[in-house]
Amino acid sequence: MTRIRFGLKSRTAPSPNPSRKGRGEEYISPRLKRAILAVAAATIVVGQAAHAQTAPTPQANDPLLGPAVRLGQDLLDAGILPRLRYIDAFAANPVGGLKQGVDNSGVVIFGADMDLGRIAGIPGGIIHATFAQLYGHELSTDNIGSRTKVQSYYYPYKQFELSELTYEQSLFGDKLNLLAGRANATGEFARDTFGCRFENVADCPLELTQLVGGFPGFPYVNWGGRARLRPTPNLYIKAGAYEIEPNRNKNSGFAWDTTSASGFVMPVEIGYGTSFADDDHPRNFKAGIWYNSAAYTDPLLNTKHTSRALFGGAPLTHPGGRTGGYLLADQMVWRHDPGSERGVTVFGAAAAPFDPSETFGFQGVLGAVWTGALDTRPADQIGVLANFIQLSRKENEYLNGLLLKAHSPGFIPQSGYVFELNYGYRIAPGATLQPALQYLVNPDDISRTSTKVAPRDAFVVGVKFSVNANQLLGLPEQLSAGFRGGE
Image (cartoon, rainbow, N blue to C red; front, side):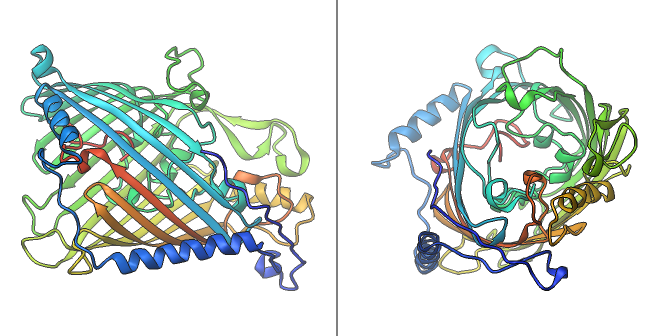
């Protein structure tokens, strides 16, 4: 998809109040105003349409989707579960950031799970294969400057990706489950139940585990795997090990040698979870730690132990052995009635490294999802999310050192926040249109360190459209429990 440009201009005058980080008056082009009005109008239309009934899942005799439903079921009966998803996100910042703009990004995810019990007589054996084609540009990188993305599924190397090729073996009634191959750690560890229902990706996956822990994350895969022990149906313990490959994001996942690997990351997680099948108010609790063996560069210091921002030079390298930990939890706190899944669920997460020489020092997330707020729209969802992320002292000094050299009128605080409010309008089972409003407070400029001014607080309006073909056709999501393919 072609990048959308609107010929935007930005003018900034020095701010008389230095506490406002050099904010100034802004100019928004007429085209951007029209774009924002169009998004607002679409949001209103979606809200008014929320009084319509949700379409049921199509059956095999459906005149439009019937052939696809029958084909999917035939493949499933033969032991092959196809998988297809499409996600597209539009976002614009009429106020704040480094400049105003509009961007669009998205992904097509497809693949299949193959039940080797039916195909080859290997009980409990499954092959998972997933591919992704990414496109577009992202507002945070282009116009805001912040490392936190405000659009789903943007990656700077937009390419065709092998995003999973693993073998899974279930043993002893799935009390022991093994998985290995080309895999990503964020699909298995520190995975929030609700984070990916938002347009910003602060919690999809938990951002700090990738940026600091070094977890390989979708769509990028390295060699690795995990073992999961489930002593009771609701309790599990799992541990994994994944290769750290610095050049992974440039090779599309098909370069399988390990010559440039720099180390490995080992996460360990314990969790407890329930569902509507065994709990009136389902809940999930997860706690984990990680160990990263790879050497890493200091955010601030050069090899002479002086500020790299002010004096330049090669970055100081630290030996491996980094550690950190995380907690995640969600709990349904109110249920509309015992016979439905309507209600309010709250969720939260926190993560931190155990050493100071990292890019980020702490991340905390708090949010809620209200399913079925309207009687006529029982499957729609209202989501609110607040993300707090704190730069490490060294990273904060590095970024502000660059701004000091550029004579910036303002600087970047150590703590930043992202807030989101969205409405997920379900067009049909598996198809959702989600208008969203976001507000970034104290955004960093990690994605645009060449800037000469600190980014201003940014207001973002956007829309995400997603289609899950498996839900649309009434097929299961995967052949075994667990995250698959960028959910």
